[in-house]
Length: 287
Image (tube, rainbow, N blue to C red; front, side, top):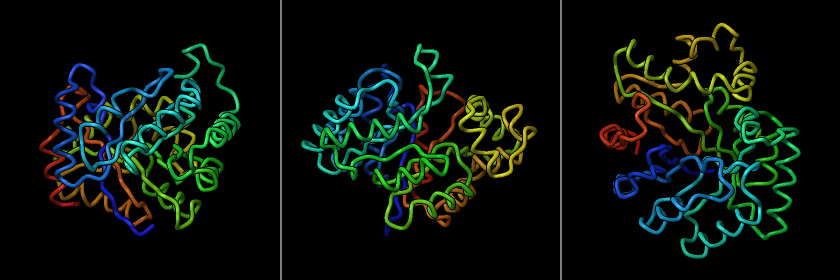
């Protein structure tokens, strides 16, 4: 696709206690030229109202859940939410769907079996509800889900993946599907503190089999996956350093075939604080 979009992936945007501050952040990100706002839809039965609040409170920027869990939200509710958003804000809401992870699903008492088949049946239900494929993307890691993204949606939103996965995803999707990976970054030139910040993020994801199995496909070993990740793995997943070094790491995903990169600025696990300075600085370099 002939586009190069820089977006934002940030948990702060879904902060229930700071809704006014989240909207202020969204408005500034819009003015800085970011293309879209991504954040998790969580594990409730409905798409959170926050997505609609941000659409209503901004003018141009896109809004997308990364992701709505197909085990928790019904296709009918998701289709209705998307249709309402498209009616009132044409072209600005993109539905991100994902099969989530067995440990997160099963702790809710849901039997996590055959996630690929579950996704296929969920997409069938969305088709029956009249939701166009152009209004949805899939959180795809492995080859089969990438192919499903190509055939049944507008594209893919991979999460927690190295540049090599971006190249593989582009090859699987073909040239005319959206590829929008999330890329977490640390704006800190000190190797020790930057990697420590990164590991506060990587440790949780390296406990989830979907992510570790995907990384093993690219040659990462058990030693790399242990203890929050080896230095080599952390450096491959999380661009860190000066703003210019971080931007260069993001650029690698564009060079590998991404149409859109959703930057998540890590700030030491402090989801209650918005890293505005980092997003301002990166916008000046990347946008």
